[in-house]
Image (tube, rainbow, N blue to C red; front, top):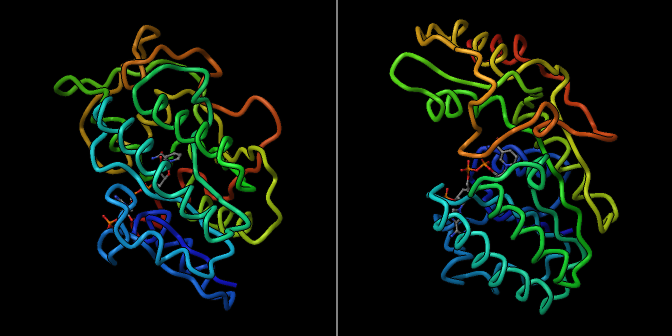
Amino acid sequence: MKIVVIGGTGLIGSKTVAILRKGGDEVVAASPKSGVNTITGEGTKEAMAGAQVVIDLANSPSFEDKAVLEFFETSGRNLLPAEAASGVRHHVALSIVGIDRSDNGYFRAKAAQEKLIKASGIPYTIIRATQFLEFLGGIADSSADGNIVRLPPVLFQPIAADDVAAVVAEVALAAPRNGIVEIAGPERAPFNELVARYLKAVGDPRQVVCDPEARYFGGRVEERSLVPLGEARLGRIGLDEWLRRSKA
Ligand SMILES: NC(=O)c1ccc[n+]([C@@H]2O[C@H](COP(=O)([O-])OP(=O)(O)OC[C@H]3O[C@@H](n4cnc5c(N)ncnc54)[C@H](OP(=O)(O)O)[C@@H]3O)[C@@H](O)[C@H]2O)c1
């Protein structure tokens, strides 16, 4: 089976490509570096030829509100019709748990991406993951004011990229759900506590302050805004295990 992974060179994309190749499928790691650009449309139609499954793991180079919305809307408007035209039977995309429960520019862009997929007529599965453990440093940076990192004590359940890629590969080989699958890490704890543990473990001297008014990328978050509310698949790698693997 031919599987095209858009964003196949990224954090999740490269791991997903490696897993699927081990299984013996023909896997195309598509990205601007390999001549497939879903924003300009370059190489997109050609990459789709003969593909049964397309996994969209692309990400916007800019997280600025307007730029990220434009990225996911333009990318979807170029990619989905090209898939429909070549008869792709399953579109898989990676989204984020809680995008409809907190408001920030990145979440709005992911909601727009999901909307285009649902309207495309192509059988699909959307995987909504919690924040990646690999993203904890970025979260600390975005919440920092000098040496103080302000975070709310809301529930947080980050997942390792390896666990995400394993589920993405499995979902891509299964029948389309025409719906959403949620995945999260094995450990659920207050946001401020997990980030404080992470910073301490990596020797980052910044102090985490628990601030119930602190926002997440500008959006207000409640106790359960960022964790799955219903049934979710759980990854195996918690923060301590992930730190051990990262240091090894
Ligand atoms: N960060 C989180 O905590 C989190 C949580 C849940 C879901 N997600 C979602 O997970 C997905 C993957 O994220 P990631 O961290 O693995 O991304 P990443 O490491 O930043 O990789 C982005 C990929 O997108 C490709 N790309 C950029 N512009 C493109 C374009 N115009 N056309 C085609 N491909 C393009 C890049 O290709 P080049 O290498 O050629 O530049 C790269 O392969 C994203 O959709 C993100 O929204 C993230």
